[in-house]
Image 1 (cartoon, rainbow, N blue to C red):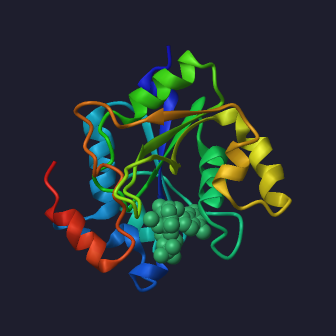
Image 2: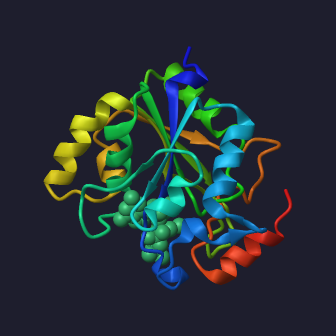
Amino acid sequence: MIDASDITALILAGGRGMRMGGVDKGLLSFNGVPLVQHTLQRLQSCGGVGHMLINANRHLNTYAAFGVPVVSDDLANFAGPLAGFLAGLTHCTTPYLLTVPCDTPMFPLDLASRLAAALETHQADIAMASAPVADDNGQQPLRPQPVFCLLRAELRNSLTHFTQAGGRKVGAWTGQHHTVLVPFDQAGDDPQAFFNANTPTELQQAERHTP
Ligand SMILES: Nc1nc2c(ncn2[C@@H]2O[C@H](COP(=O)(O)OP(=O)(O)OP(=O)(O)O)[C@@H](O)[C@H]2O)c(=O)[nH]1
Ligand SMILES: [Mg+2]
């Protein structure tokens, strides 16, 4: 069984935040608390992970003050979330890494345990969340949530090779491995759980959400 102590959560706060005006999104206030701190607290409160890392590329001292090790991308020029995955895999000392973006403040409290259960059941390399997303036809099909992954730490060499060859898309890399999609559309799941705040308006919307 995968124990919480086997999992390191990596909070992804290394993006450019262009749609937010180029600011460092993890440091923006969400109901009075920096998004990164809110994410740390939510991960702590669910008890599903034993260790945490923050992935950031700016304001490193500010991030360090949250009391969790901060790791930065080795890949230059904001190469995308996979650069964060690689930084996390490089620095994590546990057999599993859970990736959680800083801009999705209502993410499921049982994220780690459900991804871990699916990884084990399917003997997979990667468990990726999938969640309903409204489309233009009023439907809510399940869509992969590529920045919510539980990864086996031994995938580090694979990701190093993939990114060295210029690969940047999360799905293109995870598609090379046995990946199981884990649906978060069960009774009791918050349909807004994967709502991510990419713009100031969306951040305000998220602040108004009460599950
Ligand atoms: N380490 C790292 N993380 C990234 C990078 N780009 C995006 N991310 C993270 O991936 C997650 C999803 O990113 P987006 O919300 O799509 O992108 P963003 O860069 O934050 O914002 P935009 O510039 O508006 O697209 C967020 O948690 C980002 O912090 C990057 O170059 N490096
Ligand atoms: Mg986003």
